[in-house]
Image 1 (spheres, rainbow, N blue to C red):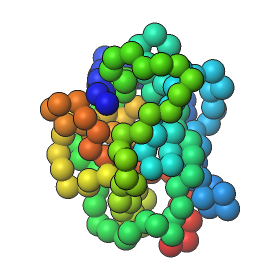
Image 2 (spheres, helix red, strand yellow):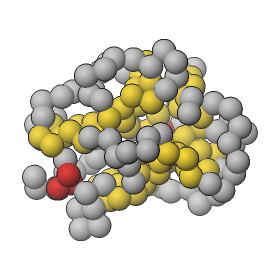
Image 3 (cartoon, rainbow, N blue to C red):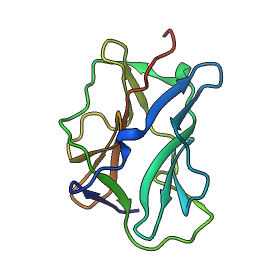
Image 4 (tube, rainbow, N blue to C red):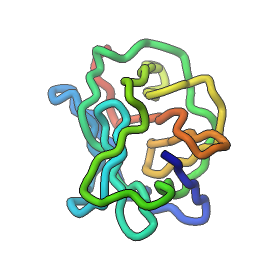
Length: 153
């Protein structure tokens, strides 16, 4: 699966990233009901909309008991739009990996990394406090999330 980063626009400034510790889940508010398809990272869904398949929300299960404590920080990033390249059939979910990716939490900074926290690449903040890293082949490396609050870890 390939991704496209566009730094000429930004749609995510009005979104809030929330972690619900009782439900072990992430949610972006406000949410959108009509989507094209979902991109799945572990059990999180990133929803794509419109003709250009831009990612506009994130939601789903992400159990904090699976998070490994670390000192990792997200790479430098700037705001923009994350799009899914190509044409994928609507109404389906597509996973970036067959296996669950590791999750690392920095409790001091509040950043959670899903994927490889050490590999560098191209970055974009596509929703407030949601950053993705892709490689030069436009493949997924990592997703960085900083919710408004964290559970007690």
